[in-house]
Image 1: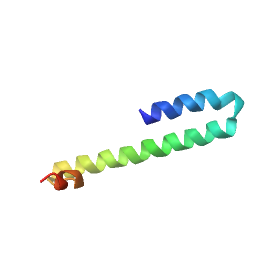
Image 2: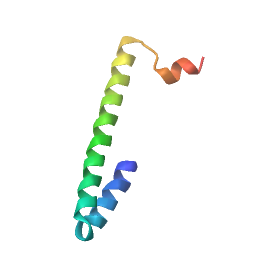
Image 3: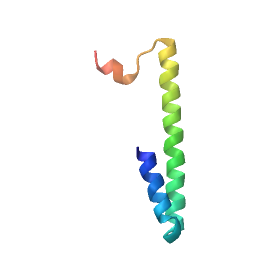
Image 4: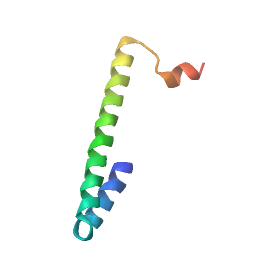
Length: 59
């Protein structure tokens, strides 16, 4: 949802403020990359039978 909102803002600012639009696109790519790494780590932990930090706290 955050990525969608940032993308919408990048499109809105693309004509009037190209620098802000470019920075928003960089933020979108960074957020998506971090989310991808986080989901991959969760997937690997689940395959190995490890509990995530959130699951450890829910004892």
